[in-house]
Amino acid sequence: MSRLIIEGGRPLHGSIEISGAKNSALAIIVAAALATEGECILDNIPQGSDIGTICLILQDLGVGVWFDDEDRLHIRGSSLNKHTASYDLVRKMRASFYSAGLLLARVGKAEVPLPGGCAIGSRPVDYHIKGFTHMGAEVTIEHGYMKAVANRLQGSQIYVNRASVGTTINLMIAASMAEGTTILENAAKEPEVVDLAIFLNGMGAKVRGAGTESIRIEGVDSLRGIEYSIIPDRIEAGTFLFAAAITGGDILVKSVVAEHLRVPIVKLEEAGVTITRGDNALHVAAPNGRLKPVDVETLPYPGFPTDLQQPLVATMCLAEGTSVVRETIFDRFRYVDELRRMGADIKTDQGTAIIRGVPQLTGAPVEITDLRAGAALAIAALAAEGRTELYGVEILDRGYEFFEEKLRALGATIYRED
Ligand code: UD1
Image 1 (cartoon, rainbow, N blue to C red):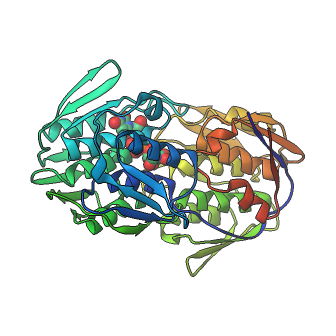
Image 2 (cartoon, rainbow, N blue to C red):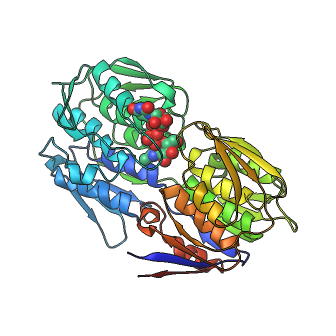
Image 3 (tube, rainbow, N blue to C red):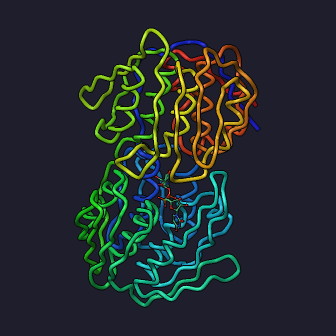
C-alpha cells in the first residue's frame, strides 16, 4: 500500500503537457479490435491502470496487444478467438463492458460479467442491454453474466436514455458492423464520442452525426487497421486549471482543446481566474485575493462535466462566499467527508453541495474514494496548510498519467511513500 504525501501552501507555476484522453482511449482500444485486416497503431495513449486493464481484457480474448518502443499501442484484432470476458478483469472497470459491443459485432455472441456497484453509486448497464436487444440480440442474465447472441446484429432506431456516454459508445461499436443502419437518438455528444466516430470512420465505418444528438451508423462488412492519435484529456486539463486556481498559481497548460472545456473555463472566469487561450494551450492565472464563489450544475456535454465536479468543489472550499453545486449524473459526494477533515465547510443534501468558503484548509490524512475524488483531494492538499497523506492512491493511478511528476514540475511538493 502506498500513499501520496503533499506539503501544501505553494502556488503552482510553470507549464505542463496534457496526456491523451483516458475515456477516449478506452473506447478506441476496444473498437480497434473490430479490424480484421491489418492492425491499429494508437498514439497518445495515456499510461494508467485502466488502460492496462482494457488491454488485458482484449489479450484474454485472443487479440494481439502490445506497446512499441515509441509507446504506441498496436492492436491486432484478427486473432480474437473467445467470446467470454474474464470476471476478474471486467470487475475492475465499467468501461470493460465495451467488450460486449465488440464481441457481438465480431463473433455474434458475448458473455460479459455485469459490472458491480462502485463508489459513485449504482452504475447499471441496462441501457446498453436494451440497445443490444433492439438490435436483435437475445440477451439473458445468468450467474452474474450478460449472455447475448445474435447471428448478425440488425440496424435499429434506439433512444439512448439520459444521453449515456457508455451506451452511445458501446452501441456505436456494435452497430459499425451490423446489418443495416442504426440511429442513436439522444446520443451523448461528448468529445470522446466524436473521437471514436472519427476513428471508426478511418477504419472504414460509416458513422455520421457524432457530436449531435442523433448518430447514424450504416453497418459495413469489415473494418481495417489504421494509425490514430487520441485527443487530449479534457478532464486532466480541467483538473490542472482548478489546481492552479486553488493554489493562487499561474500556469500554462499545453496540448489542450479549449473548446472541450468551455463551461469549466466560464465558471473559473466567474470565480475571478484569468484564462487566456493560446495555440492548443491555456494560460491560467489565479486572482491576487480569494476566489469568488460559483453555482454549478453538472450536465451531459457541453454542460459542466461531472468528472470535474470534485475538483470544482475542492476549489470552492477556499472561495470567499457560498457556492452551490448540483450533481445530476451520479451519486458522487462521498468524498466531501474527507474535505471536511481538512477543514472544509460543506453540506450535502440529495445531490446538492453547499460549500461555504473558509480562509484556510489544513493538511490531514484522507482516503481517496474514487478517481476524480482523488484528484480533488490532491488539489485541496496543494492549497492546504501543512502535510496531507492521501491513502488509496492506486485509485488515482487508474486515470492520471504522471500526476506527481507533472505537479512536481509545477513546483508542488508531492511524493509517494510505501
Ligand atoms: C462515462 C465516463 C465517466 C463520466 C460519465 C458521465 C468513461 C469510461 N466514463 O461513464 O468518466 O463521468 O461518462 O460523463 O467514459 N446509466 C444507467 N444505465 C445504463 C447506463 C447509464 O442507469 O445502462 C446512468 C448512470 O448511472 C448515470 C447516467 O446514466 O447516472 C449517465 O451515465 P453514463 O453517461 O453512461 O456514464 P458512463 O459511460 O458510465
